[in-house]
Length: 560
Image (tube, rainbow, N blue to C red; front, side, top):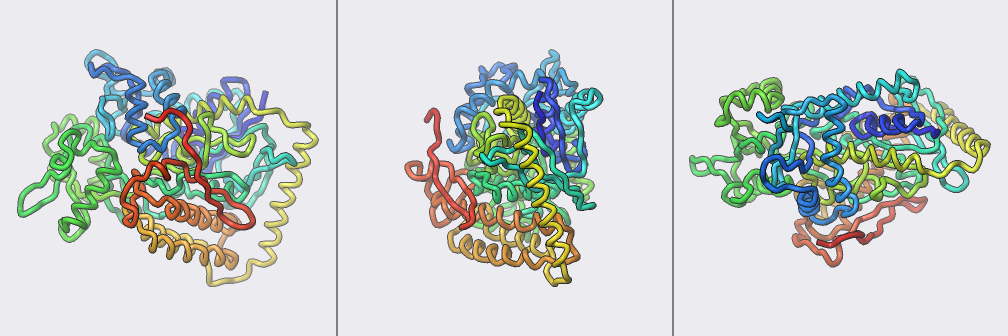
């Protein structure tokens, strides 16, 4: 029996917890808040699986090919093969757990088209797929909580790994944010499932609770990251005062059309430029096309960089059943009824394909540390297909759990306990030092984070250039130094995590500067061509006392 720490309670973390408990291991599941408030509940669209129930001769191999093609062949082929092959079994497992998928007249799982896929393979629960799955998995998880195999630790955040003399992870130091309560938790393995770094950019379609600090803190301890420049802009989001709200790809999968007004007439630009798939081209292609309409063609709607997404021609019963969340979002946040009028949309930051570098078994470069879900990098390459994130999180959680069972036993409990005591002493020393010197200051963590967001949104847009990226990196380095001046108005948690967020932003910019080509979600104005010979490689980021280091790593596996 092993002790497993799982940090993050969305789809990846909850799945990993269930699979660990099923196999008789003890789990402590840490998260800022309950699973029902994780970002995973925002997943509207569905989950991909080649069930082949629509007479299209679909197969896991077709799913595999679409995923690699959509990711511009920057994905890990072995990992993608496992993802696609196991997808049908995962949907059956989810049904068994109680997920209420939509069904056709024959009682089979209903499937729909999603961007970048040639076949109908996205199963869904109306526009509430994430909520359905999280609800079912939370109920499954609670069975093991009652049995004492899973212990939920809500309100806790990651501070650091506990590393022994052989640089093996033997636990983690955690903090309760508001009370500044710091504790160490020994373990045989740690699984990070902390989501994407939304706070680095501020207004995204995701939750700002997923701030990226865990990834930044892990980088400081030697964990390697990969392909951080690959940031997905979802083509259809709407602007609200606090963030960009997602209009699910299902709207286009069910027949929604993108258009703008040119010379007084509706111009269905995607259907003209890409007649085969139209608005269901991969997300990076659709996002760039909308950008082109607004900037190169100079066509704006009422002076704004927006185009229309039109679902008014769809039957009301289809909209109300499958797109009810879209209707609610549009009415609540924009005061418009999509039954009657088109939705003004523009691309917004939605998903981070890059993250913690993992292999096909979700192992990291630190023994005993695993990563799954959006915080890890391998399945999606340079562009994620809709419906693959939900699948990747669940499958990744399963694999990370399975591999954590196999981690080598610690040399001795005495060695582990010694490493834990040392880590806790160090953490408390840092806290006590901060208390002594936390005098008043004009610098606050909020000011720094907001400035980071401005810098990143200005430099890491749909199109990028070297000069702007260089300026951004220079400014982020200045902000990193400013972090030492954060004053008493901030908590210790903010004091510790703000530099980690700034460092992660630096790593993203460094990756973008290093990839001197255009591929998928990464488009360089100064390097507009794709260069397979030099850059069909992972850009791997590490950190030591000398700063951020970059190396290029060949992608292993089949080359199709």
